[in-house]
Image 1 (cartoon, rainbow, N blue to C red):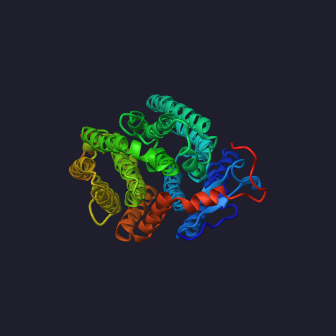
Image 2: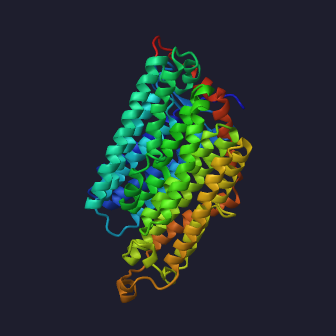
Image 3: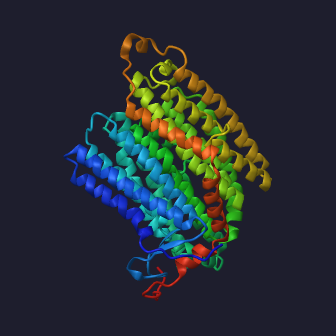
Length: 510
């Protein structure tokens, strides 16, 4: 691996750019067109930050920023490696899709404030991704949660408020476990920097107590990642939220929980990963299979997609839990593939629900007559979710199955393959229900409305990305492999984060 490189302010720009976007949208809240223009500029700037992050970490480099010039252990260090660069790139694409969907809505409503909350959510996501400090991760995690609750509540309909309250209560439980775990880890090690946990965790007085502390952190993150049995908040929140918010929750927010688990496990000494691996594999395999089974029984289209998100998170966590370079690379590839695929499916679902006035997928038939773009985008995304070639979902699931075979995780592999078979059957049924037949009687009587060109364009662009990542997967796979090697080895990231800043090291650990 090449030596670590120290970037100037790029890691700091990851949360600062969306923060500026939130402030600009609030200032322009009274003028929806101006707020939309500010949002486009801010999102374009964030996409530029993500692109520079990918370029700077392409061969394994690490970009570091030390606010105030203070290094470890006094300063809070922000760092971008290949794994965080990949996550930033996914965040940029998914938030751009959600923003585009919001802007094509003819009724702006309270657009300025909604966009401000969206950028506040992006601050939380990007900050959690770039921070190298465990407590700061918790702070950004909380910010992400607060913005999510408000966005799920949407227009304030009863079912949205109810889902938001459920989400908030369970997320507060997640946050409580996380902060207690962080406090317990600090009490035993005297450090909060993720880069220092590998050494400090190997020298703790009571390894069982330290393991319990780390497990509290992992449990809080597993709740956000919707692992069984901590998944109950997800179906309501994802299904009743506005479409743009569903895209964000499924495309990015649940990924932050899994990303955090990956970071915490990679930062700790190897014995911690060995101890929790069997449990994580069982939970991940159970999540993939049980959530897919429940999805089969759903009639509400968005609720079905929400359950399938939980199922797909099982694949991601199972691959990451292996702890091997192949497993971590497969997990990151799954992160990208699922983010693009599920964003496409939720955009398709939102378009179909608005056009038909129905939420049950079996009553929406006949949409293929409105435009060929929507059924084509839906087919691409459905096949990708099912893991069929040559799409993004096939590339990620093939990598996951290969990693399982190499690790001889046969029971987990069997569960994932059974879940895949269920998803293939489910996606075939849903696509035929949406685009075959004549739909409900109400639809045939003329309650349907025309499809909007903007909605179709968003769905088509996302579907095209699903195809591109599947057909030309090597660039994404290269970055995923680079990230996996960096996580397994960890030396470049660790050295870059722990190096003294211009003002030197502090005297006391944080």
